[in-house]
Length: 93
Image: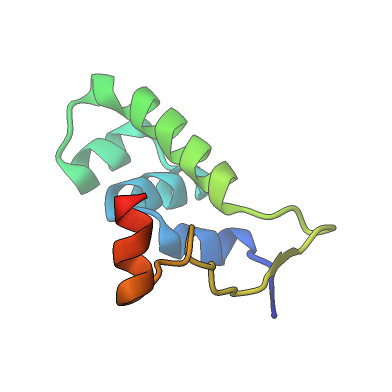
């Protein structure tokens, strides 16, 4: 079992580079022009990019007062397949 708690800086590492750069510049108080120059995108694209980046960041974050528990499990087969004669009997019936 693993306890996963992700802070903002760790979550930024999980984002696409363009989203992470845009959010870091925005967090630092940079103007939209800085995002335009850093990413080479039109100025009209910045608000949408920031909205998408914030949504993706929010999805990656776990609130500080909660942890996710991850327990890897092996999924059982949907059904057991009979083998040999038992299989042939099952197919014919």
